[in-house]
Amino acid sequence: MSKVTAKAPANIAFIKYWGKKDEALRLPLNSSLSMNLSHVFTLTTVDFLSDLAEDEIEMGGEKLVGEEAERIIEHLERVRKLASIKLKAKVKTKNNFPKGTGIASSASGFAALTLASTKAAGLNLSEKKLSILARLGSGSACRSIPDGFVEWLKGNSHQTSYAHSLYPPDYWDLVDIIAVVTKKGKKVSSAEGHGRAESSLFLSARVRAMGAKVRLLKKTFKEKNFTKLGEIIEEETLNMHAVMMTSKPSIIYWLPKTIQLMLAIRQWRQEGLESYFTIDAGATVHIICLKKDAGKIKEKVLRLRGIDRVIVNYPASGAKLVKSYLF
Image (tube, rainbow, N blue to C red; front, side, top):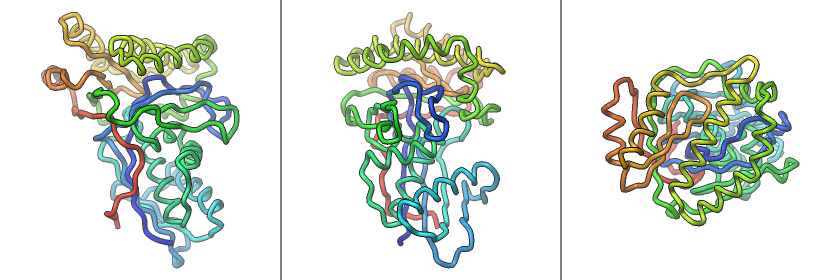
């Protein structure tokens, strides 16, 4: 046993994951595609110790209790079972961005926890197996394990639903400018939202179209057709949020500033500055552009009133071990 720290990026989904066909295994209704992000990440240190009576979990400098802690302990139990150990763990984790705002904190969190805890327990899992294990903690966490631009295969079983890298980080000079419009966490968690998805009349139509949409986006990546990429991701965002808004009870993650940004981005395009929006389960807007335009777009975002924070991200590597420790 040894103390281990892992760093894992959040990711932004271009083709979204919304709705599960198996709750326990977190098997998605459709495959999804994403980009790992360079400047929003989680650091997690794990150490299995013989003198601990129970798992000790700290997040952002505070002891974690309740449902969040239970979810992490459940994941540690999976690792203990794989490693055939019974030792309790000390876990410290921190994000460099606000959680619960639509920046995939559970993705980076469970990817970092998966890599750190398996290594600390003496396991040396393949990328595929790490991705499968991370998926059990948080579905989108499986996409934060591989590098760069990633596809999560929906699969039809525990072993066939995993993520793999489509292209390395330096394949395409895309930039994701995150415009954080609120520090407050969302009122409806992603997990709860997934559970409501099937109550939307639009879900079945969405799922039927997903196979063709994934194939089209992969073709777009192969051709590096930025305009087509943008058209697909904006349509996909509106499609997913339409399902959320027509669920029972309805879920509306957007705030007035979210909509203002969406309209502004479309106006900038008309003026010749090409960028596109994509929004996960939250109010935060991700602005996708080419690297050559990132500076101009960041300036425009900063001129808007009510933006809490702007974070510029480039395509990034997946989960990695680091040498520093949090305790």
